[in-house]
Length: 147
Ligand SMILES: [Zn+2]
Image 1 (cartoon, helix red, strand yellow):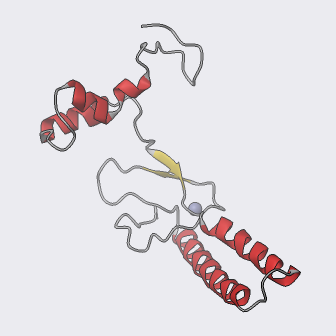
Image 2: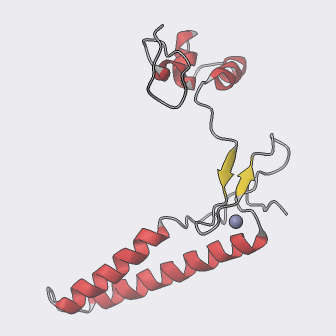
C-alpha cells in the first residue's frame, strides 16, 4: 500500500486503487461472477464496498436544499423533504414536458432555417435542460416525504 495525498481523505490507498473495492471486484475476488454469487457473498461484498452510496442526499426538488436521510431499511426512504416539494417537482415536470411538446410542434411547423425556428429550438433546449432535473418518479416505490 501507498499513502495518497489526493482525494478526499488521507487514508492509505492500495496500489490497485479504489476500484478493487467495488462490489463487483469484491465478488470476483471471492471467485464468483455477480450473476452466480450466493446471497451471503453479495451481502458481504455490499457491506465491504468502500464506496458506499451516500445515506443522506438532497431533496429531489432541485430548488430545495433540505436533506433526506436513508431510513435504514425501515419503510420507504423519502425522495422529497415534504409534500410541497413533491408537488412542486411534479407540477414543474408536467409543465416542462407540455412546453417541450408545444415548442416541438412549433419547430416542426416552421420553414427550415430562419430565426424563428432557431429561437424556438433555443427555448425548447432551455426546457429540456431543466427537465433533466425533474425525472418522472411517479412509479418509484420509494416516493414518500419525511413528514
Ligand atoms: Zn424539499
